Length: 120
Image (cartoon, rainbow, N blue to C red; front, side):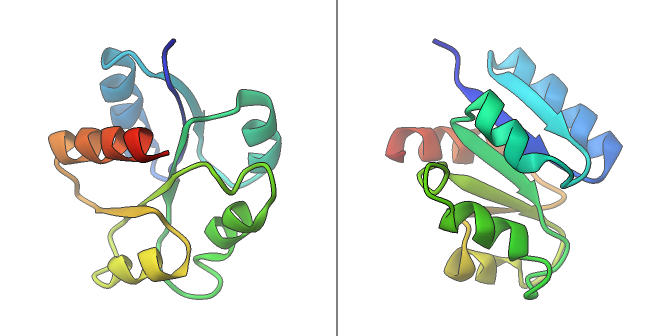
């Protein structure tokens, strides 16, 4: 069975790139460019991994990630944060299972996804 990945990325070019790469790898993808209805997408799509764009590791910036990890039924889903922020690694201490800095190396992104799927 193909694994499902929910991608929330605000930059449409990056979203399209991720879509192409992950679809080519055989993943089933659900793409979002805003946080609207993200929980409905999680409920309906039942992703195995969530890729989440976080601009800044602030309280506001990590709110969605923390909410996902605090919600029963969703807290088991690995959340991989994509971020350009130079201190994005601190998000791992706050809520994320892993952080992939942008711009990202495609092989690193794919290996990070695989590692999270194995450990989930």
